[in-house]
Image (cartoon, rainbow over the protein chains, first blue to last red):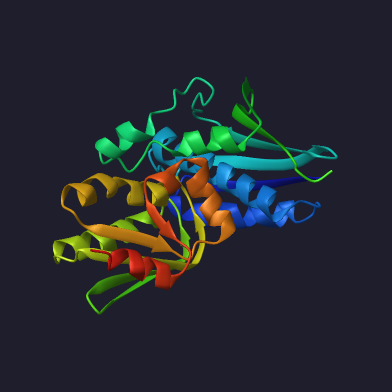
Length: 139
Length: 114
């Protein structure tokens, strides 16, 4: 079973993406915490892609695919034909520095890295693919 | 969807958040806190009992007020976070830099401390 959602790079679409993720994940037995954490991680990657990757250009579209690979492993593919951010190469900022600078940003990808077990970046004919793997807490 | 209402009671400025704060709606939360400070409010009570989701953009709004509030000796307290939402604060370590209480009574108690 695989679920797919296509969205344009509009910030207002984030809530629709979260609804899609929650609905898709409800097809599998998962804890509320796992669902919430996956919704959060996907929301953060998509927000980064919309705002920083595509500058909120509503003509750009991207796709989110969700599938269950094993009994306890969820795979999420976020496919953007135009660009993808190298999350693995991202250096996490120091929280105290962000506070001193009165920064409002800088924590999204930090959150993704702490919520997701493995992140892979791939490129193919369909575009650039950010793949998130989340191991479920339920056996 | 996000709804924010405000009220002032017994010298405390209440900001009541209902719904989801994400990259799209966090600007509204920022606006409400900023407006309260511009009005000279010095005790902010953030009611999150109706907050169902917060992304890093919303957390960033709270984080951006930590330093100015300390510098100007203002107080802000957040209360009523659900365990799932609190967990997001905790993952980023924000529970250690923001004042978070479980109940309104505890939050008011903190604001009224001398």
